[in-house]
Image 1 (cartoon, protein in one colour):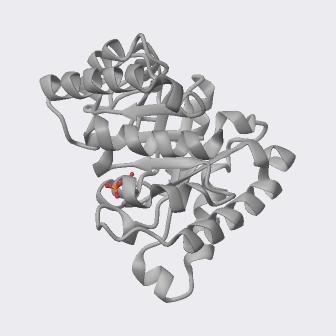
Image 2: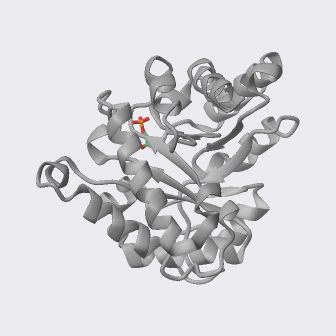
Length: 255
Ligand code: PGA
C-alpha cells in the first residue's frame, strides 16, 4: 500500500514547512496504525528540500511533481532528475493529467521521463486516465492502454518495484466526484492485465494507485478493492489530518 500526496502548486515555503512538520508529528503519533503503509508527498520544487528535512526522521518519502528528460543544460525553468535526487526525492510524478492538458505532455514524453527516472534511481508515479468525454464515448480502456504502453515504451527490463501507476480519471480530479469503487477496480484490473503483457509476472508487484477526489470518507471503499494498492491524493493531502487518516485506512487494508 502506498499513499502519496500531490501538493500541486500549493504551499509557500513557510506553509510547506508547517505542513511537513504537522505530518511528521502525525506519523509519530500514529506510528503503529501506519506501520503497514508507505507514504510519500510531492511538494513544489522550491519546497522539496525543506519538506524532506522536516520529514527526515520519518519514513515518509518525498517526490517531485514532474521533471525534464535531460540531466542538465539550457532548458530555462526546468528541473532535472539529478536535482530531484539531490533534494532527497525517491519518487517523481510523471504524466499527470494537468501536465498533459496545460503543458502539452505527450505519451512519448511520458515514456522518455519514465526512462530518465529509472536512469537516476527515481521511482516514477505514472498517471493515466480518461476524460469524461472519452469515458462517455466508451473509449476509457483504449485511452488508458495507449497511455500505459507509451509510458513503458522505453522502460524494458525495469523492475516492477520501480514503477507506480496511478489511475486518475480526469473527471474525478478536484471535482469531489470520485470514481466508484467498481469503476476503479475494473480499470485497475485492466491495467494489471496490461502490465502482465508488458512486465510479466512482476505486474503483481506494481503499485496501482487510484487518484481523483479520494478523501477520508471514501478511501476505505476504494482502497479495499483487490487491485487498488494505494492512492494519489491531491486536495486531501494539504492537511496532515486528512492525509494521515487516508494513510491509516490504507494501512488497515494492507495489514
Ligand atoms: P484530488 O487530486 O485528490 O484533489 O482530486 C488528485 C490528483 O490530481 O493527483
